[in-house]
Length: 214
Image 1 (cartoon, rainbow, N blue to C red):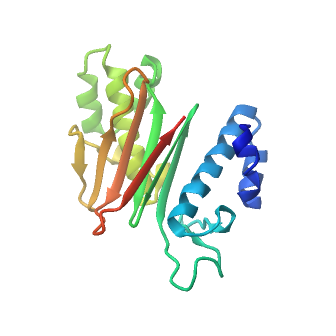
Image 2: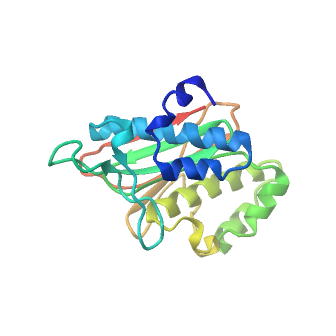
């Protein structure tokens, strides 16, 4: 694990440490721990408490992340709650924070074979559109559609617990869905082959934070 993360691993809860121990792959374990340290640090800055004092409850119905908050007794009586979303892909972590529901996904570009597999689980309208992409461009287009789909489902609090073929992400770079969620792709460094998408509910205060690091 990176030195900075190993020095901060004490911020993590017992449940987070248990999840890390359950990961057999050393690289996956290291990146999980680093992502949780980053998440806690960013949330602590927003909530005005120490990273180890950030409470990360999960929704009792579907198990999706519930808004983060300071633990009881931290941050004062008017302590805020903030929504967040976390995504990882080898070498990168993305965190999105907002006052209302948010979702983020990050993926490396899929191989042609991986793209064909993903294409089969997308909505029929998206499948038809993407199947018409030139073969050399199809992995890029399919990966773009997939990260937008995952970001949308995270913001809805369902994740992939629902059939992804029931949700169309559409062709436009920015789409407002019927439930008010806005989904769009995020431009990444040229040549990185990295795909990022975000989803959010309009925030009257206009405050959102996206951090992508590698």
